[in-house]
Length: 288
Image 1 (cartoon, rainbow, N blue to C red):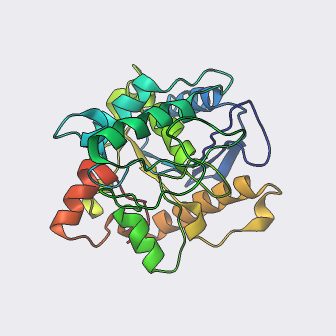
Image 2 (cartoon, rainbow, N blue to C red):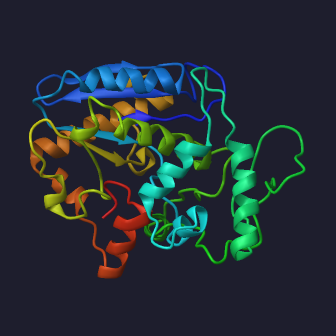
């Protein structure tokens, strides 16, 4: 389970990348804290190269997609979905080996593109001094024609949780920047010559339902997770981010051992919702 980060410089400790690894036989085996996204992905590739005969679930704590309707407008392709968004982000956002990236500049240009196409500039929030482009500090008055939240976030909010919107790129609790750099990183992971054939992205490649987790030995199933949906076991590590990953790995292993993990892959969705989830929006593992 990977706690991702959008830091713009190498960082360890609080508010940085933490990776917890567990196995049924040994429990939580590793807790890593790579200082950059580049090193984190290299660490993960090295780990997965040792699991060629095993089935592996990898969770990343950022959203894998945007509210329905965004992909065609971003890409200019009428039938675009999640894959085309990932391709677009990987082609347009730079992220170097020291975490230097241009995500705010790129999303300012995206806002300009969307404003011209549909009259909406949904991305907002940035640190530092004022900007003179299409990226604003404050939430826009409307996100139309897009929804503020994906279907899964709407369900979480109805249950009393408070996930943040994908459009918010900065400030406490925001996930938008992690998403941008995370989807970019996953696009490169999918293309990795030694791993690409083993990877499945849930639920895009698999659909939803209990059988969506039934993969062959050697498969790597990548899913988005949201650790805040679980009670934190704060005593397992002094750094909250690390404790969240250990808590999540431990909980997943417990559910797997009891046979209850399969229900996490089976959210109750209408046919139309399932289509939107698989084609573009994605879903958070465990939200049923």
